[in-house]
Amino acid sequence: MKRSERHRLKENDLSHAFTEATARLAERQRTFGLVGGIVLAALVVGGGYWAWHTRAESRAQAMLGEALMIVQSPVEAPAPDANGKVAQVAGTYPTVNARAEAALTKFMQVANDYPSTSAGIAGRYYAAAALSMLGRPSEAVTRYQEVVDRAGAKNFYGRMAQLGVIEAHVQSKQFDQAIAKAEALANASDEALPRDAMLMELGRAYAAGGKKTEAKQTFDKVVKEFPDSPFVDEAKSQLAALT
Image (cartoon, rainbow, N blue to C red):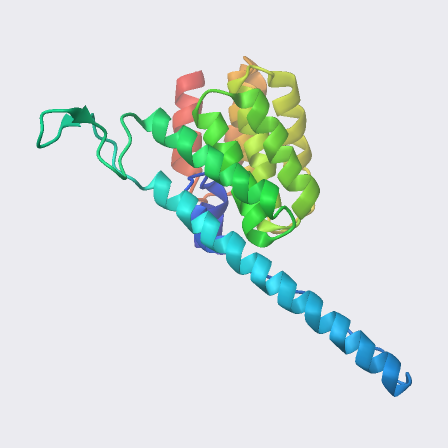
């Protein structure tokens, strides 16, 4: 597992993960040996589905791009215009929360309008992250779990959403649920989930839940078993704070 990939799994930022939302169109298999008319009909139907799916993915990606533009919009207080009337400058938002609310609405529109597309799944993930940032962790858990259910635990956003569920449970002080989820990931055999990163998630959940002994043991395991891990410095800091 490359260090860059470990850092990517640690990220939970609305704008950075967009580059991971690439369209994955399934290859259609065609059966040989059928009569010409049936083959032609299958090709017509298959081509129609492919064209529809491509258009839907393109529209969804465009809408997702608009949502991400909102995330990157400036935050500025309303200011007087040329006539002295105080108004919000177009393309800006008065607060970070106002911007997040606007992005949330757009992300959910993508997710609901194009639920089975790559962009729709990404939109649902970003919506969950926005909800967590807005202090609505219970709703975030629901959205994150929907990502896992729709995309699967092996999909990039599915994996990221599993981490999001843990963090949202901690945010809502549901520590037992957070710890149970983190333990499951730490003990999983999925090579795409670096064990040091999963142990860090587990250690944070233990620490947040007041389980200092378990947290110290977990962070100590990261330091001893993964000396080259990008999480070693954080693990040491956590150990020092728990001592």
